[in-house]
Each structure stands twice: as C-alpha cells, then as structure tokens.
Length: 135
Image 1 (cartoon, rainbow, N blue to C red):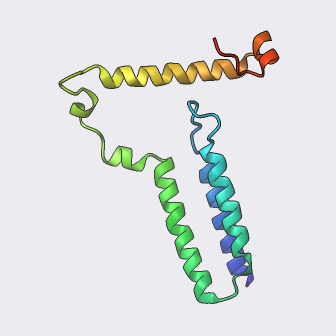
Image 2: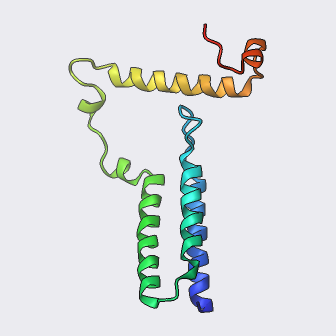
C-alpha cells in the first residue's frame, strides 16, 4: 500500500470515528449502545481489510466505505428528517390529536427517569438482591 493510499484510508477511518462520536445516546435502551456497535464494526472492518493487496478490490472497498460514511453522516445529521418533514396530520391524527405529543412526553419522562436512576447510588434492597427485586 502506497503512502497516499495509506493516508486516504486513515482519513476515511478518522471520518467514520468522528461521525460515530456524534451519534446520539439512546437513554431508553442503556444496554444497547448503537455508538459502540458502530465503532466496533468500523474498527473490525478496517482491521480485516488491512491485508488487501489487489488494487481493484481495494478501490471497491474504498468506494463502499465512502458510500457507507455518507449514509451514516446523513443519519447523524437528520438530513432526511429535515428533507422530508412529517405533516401536521401525522403529529395530530384526527382520532386522537394529542397522541403523538403524549407519546413524546412519556418517552422523555422515561428517559429522564433512566438518567436519574443511573446517577443514584443503588438502594439497600438493590445491593442486597442484585437489583432484581420484584415489588
């Protein structure tokens, strides 16, 4: 691998890592960290392709990586949410106009509770029973 291709791969790798660092945290699923999954996939993908010597295969992999990076950037930047905004009819269906806003409020409340629980020290019962106590 020449110095120019090595720097191209390194630049691509760093670009992936920068986009992944901006990935939002899902407070409702603290045990499923999409940022971590993406990071592992990128690291492993680049590691597996270190041994590629064929120029055509290498060019194909670079092209695919750039397409994946572009897609990841668009998702991280909410490009499609801004490009295709939802209509007011979606946010306020005729049958239950307050449904969506109530759903968002419930999700926000659950996320806030998860964050508060995470920051609190475990209670006596949780320490005693390993956090699996059923009320």
